[in-house]
Length: 387
Image (cartoon, rainbow, N blue to C red; front, side, top):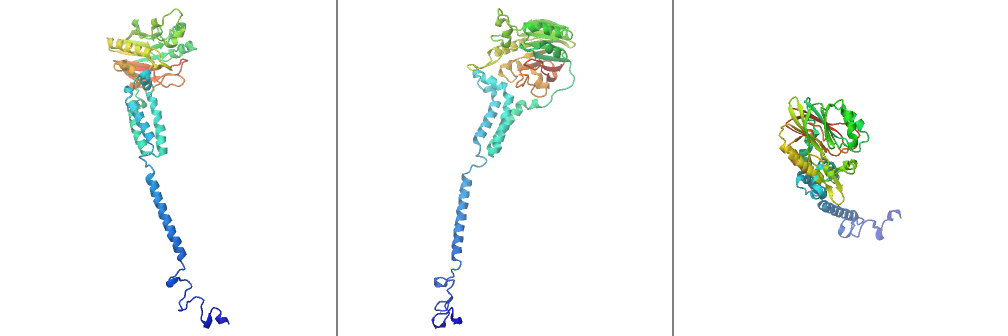
């Protein structure tokens, strides 16, 4: 019958009940509902999995270095860079290494943005903080050169130029220098072959001139008491190729001293071309000849009776070089005092160092600048000075 479809014997409905009439369809033993038992087990498993994942994340985050532990190599390099610049005078001058470091000292600043980029990429707080040292040291050494310290006026314009022994157009160089506006024009690396060309090209503008060996001074003002200064020992650099075969390099004259008669009294002027430096595979940065000349010139300047002194020339080194302490302790650099920027002069095609100098004592530089190329491998330097 239809009514007994879900019933057992005796007409009792057995579809969802037990013998006691209790519904057993969704319960287990003891009458406990088991309808969600599977879901409960799944939830418990998921909870345990989430807990284990959280533990793993905590362990990973604890083992991962924080921002103060990242980039230890970058931090060490930044500190080393700062210490080298700060203590450059203490770098041993073995094979000229100390001198080379000091001549290239401004270029150490190029490494700072590279280290900063690495620190940011590594998210290293330690490396960023370590960079404070080299930045501070570099700014203390060269920050003053980044501003224009020139002033208008001045009583005398001086120019110095290493015209180059291999200059292909000395006549063109002479024409450019003749219109430079210099009252005093110092030339270095004059060859015997080109000397006449410069004398002819500059004669109309400069009625006075004095030449000693390979250096000379052309002047709009009278000159007197001109004499050579011995600053030579050994290698004479590019000039050696232009010397007659029977000439002795040791007899080369590369510096002079003369007196210029000005409206403010006598001015002692030195023109110098110190010995060449060499980067040699066996001897490193060879500076013996240059260093001898620097010491000799410093000794002469120390004994100079005139209180007003100007030194013009190619010193084959920057004023940061320890070899020039005898000069820089008695003389001021026109570029550092009244210039704008580093005033690099060599090589002319892409200057990386200022090795051509204007140094003064007893007069005040008002401005200092670098002139355009002339055909030499050096750029000319100029300055206005006043009393």
